Image (cartoon, rainbow, N blue to C red; front, side, top):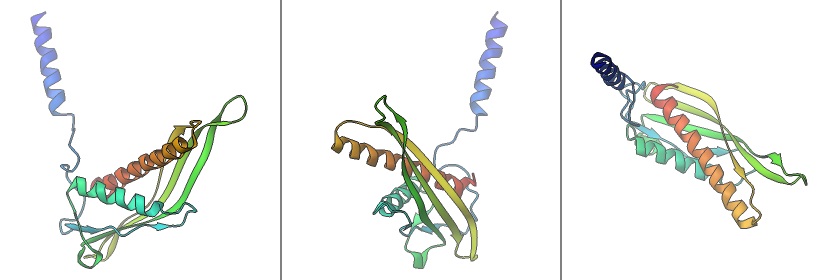
Length: 171
């Protein structure tokens, strides 16, 4: 009985050390070592939703600032450039009540990004990213707009985290 407990404790201890868990910003980067700075200009908005390019760019910049592995600088002094284009913003009803009123929406955002090594003058990453979040409809109009805005922000945060992961870890 005592031997079984000891074996179980060893297994638990070794599995903790080998789990591969890392804190954000501390993992090994797949970036070339000469890239220390990044420029993130305001993304281009090709959607019919005004102003979302400002919000998503701010969230992406904040994500990279929190990560801390690259310093954000102006484009004239950057080692790398992360640019993007918002191609699609959809607000789709996904569920209805018995009176055919929408009870839940899905916010869907599609973005094309390019990450360039400005020193080597080459594209490191070119990819389409899509994020979506859902929310339940409330009966109060002001609350409904606030809920949509918060849901959109969550989708932007999801996109920003995908971007951070792609730039540093390559997945």
